[in-house]
Image (cartoon, rainbow, N blue to C red):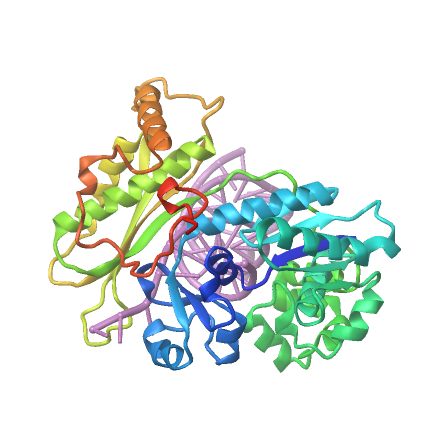
Length: 414
DNA sequence: TCTGGGGTCCTAGGACCC
DNA sequence: TCTGGGGTCCTAGGACCC
């Protein structure tokens, strides 16, 4: 048996934990640059505001209904997420962190009759210790546990299906698009073939499902029938690529500003690389205009450069990224977004260095910068190439304080 | 005026090897 | 008139997830 524990309206709920004035009203959380709506409270969902909708189309409605909005605050959400996980680890035998707001747990060894009470205990404890509301779904496979969790969200917060048969009596009529791993394109394909509901899909010929959805679809089919194909993954697999990209706060035309931006993103990517304990053997740079501005001339380019020696040296990565940016740049366009991707990653530990090329890595320097920044909890030391107070930086006009990760964000009690 | 960011996996096809 | 069988590696594109 598996459990799926999922935070309800996660980002929106995180904002409410330390700010009761945001509760019981339509609240949305905005993407970077305050452009899109990436999370909604119940009240905001009830107004019909869609996931991913552009904020400028919904501001009026929100204002009319006493709504509120917040710029995304990922340090806050990440910290509350790890508090939630630590509660789960106390109560459940084995926990896999699947995303910032979702964890799977292994329930083997727990007596079936005890599962509903365990689910309720998880809910109560997370609410008491962290201040967040979660839904708990339990079933014989991960795919069924996901569905159970969906059902739980609207039906009391806990749902236990001891068998696939029990699950199917509830979800038979649900659309296949509700199933984890079936997106809107494959849902349309299945519907056209006469498998529009979960009940119809489990009756389908596996060979046909394989033809249409590849082995991925075959696994989903088995999971729906109660055959577990997706084990709990307790080991955190090393990342295969690291991406750092951002939209600009305003259109950027000049190369020198693009060079600052790409240096900033390279620095961010390098920091993630250090945290992962990996080296990069290739670096990519991409650049594009705003595709939503139909009247503007459009351009979308990218390039990938191999590094002569696998490295995690921030300055080397910045230099290489800037050289690539100079190649990509063409004047006369209003650029909206750029990014850096590190690939062909290899673990630092035990990496075979080149016989001919000296490594550019300077661990002592990196360590010094990192410990200064860690100690003062901010970007105290950084590369001048990144620019100082850049004009292209993204907008975040309504960011809440980092209540739990910065001294100046601590709540004050009057 | 205003539209995110960061990942994974699978398949087909091309290039190459013996 | 006639041209095998078996394999690997890499990349691009498509699909999915949160």
